[in-house]
Length: 193
Image (cartoon, rainbow, N blue to C red; front, side, top):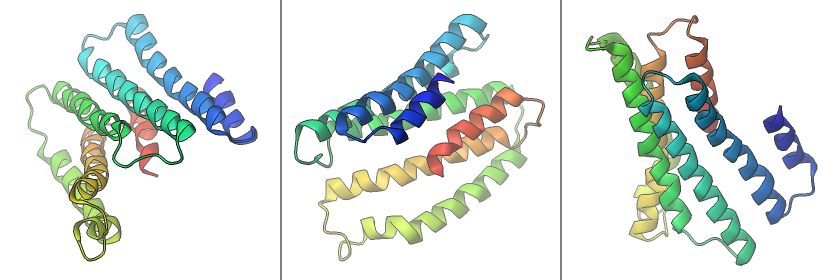
């Protein structure tokens, strides 16, 4: 309910760089706190995936704070900036967490069906994003960005698809009895909407 209140305040209060910095990042801080609190309270047998999720959320929160501070203190946010390094660091941290959850769930069994299902989904999303978004970053006649800027711009959708692929891989073979995992997949997929 605290997150919902902060989210509502974010849209109801007059947007200034300071209010965006405080309200938006308070929700991110509560997300990190929720994972850390849950680790301490429920003490799961396999803690490392959750630690990786908390580290990924912390990296994303750090990037947001840096971005809003840069936005507040300058005429424009440079691209690429140090915030991009923290944004991109979030992907391998969350990816390792998802990979550990997949490995822990399978326990040595080869689940080829969910791998193929997730692969089909990942290739379809990648194909659409390539045509709609990524082609303009790769084609030098369309993009006026320098090579480093194009590479970082391209890294975001590629990393999104990689994490989404792993989330689908994790979610495909489960049934609805695992409500905590479905909640995790639903909340994790909100960034791609």
